[in-house]
Image 1 (tube, rainbow, N blue to C red):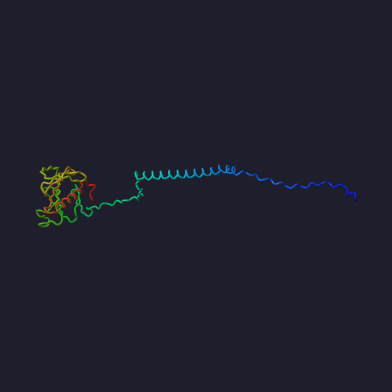
Image 2 (cartoon, rainbow, N blue to C red):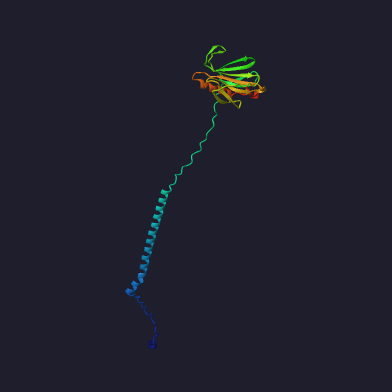
Length: 239
């Protein structure tokens, strides 16, 4: 035991304390020099952004002003919405002769229509068939005997085509059975329709007498309307 105490003890290495790494000290001037580029970069960026915004505002204002001037110089018409189409329905024209009577010649050479309240007188004149139409409201001396100034429309069937020479004061055109004929006024109230050709080469002579009162034009118009219903064709006759 005493010998162990006298022996030298092995040396044990103890860990050395860690040395502190001294902080790097940058001189103040050098630190400022390192910071200057970053400051300059940020200022340049801000200036570039501000300049870009300014340019954008200038360009936008210019375009707005240009469009405004263009609209003033070239105004556009307002857009009008299309209207709904108007549909017109055709209405039949009333026939003024719908309630008229129909006269058919005994030999069925012709037929026509005349107002229902008019008077008709048929007679034979020298072998020629004559039918006279007298407007209502005008005087008769006796039944079947009209007064001198009573107007009439008279149709005479002749054995052949008979020309008639007249000295008319006025001439008009009138439609008879789809054909134009001349209407002669021999005086202010008397006249004749130019002779028309009927079947079998017979002649149709139409005479008329107008009233002297204010109803002259109305009666004349009704005469024309009667003759507008005139037809020679037996196939068109009313049964």
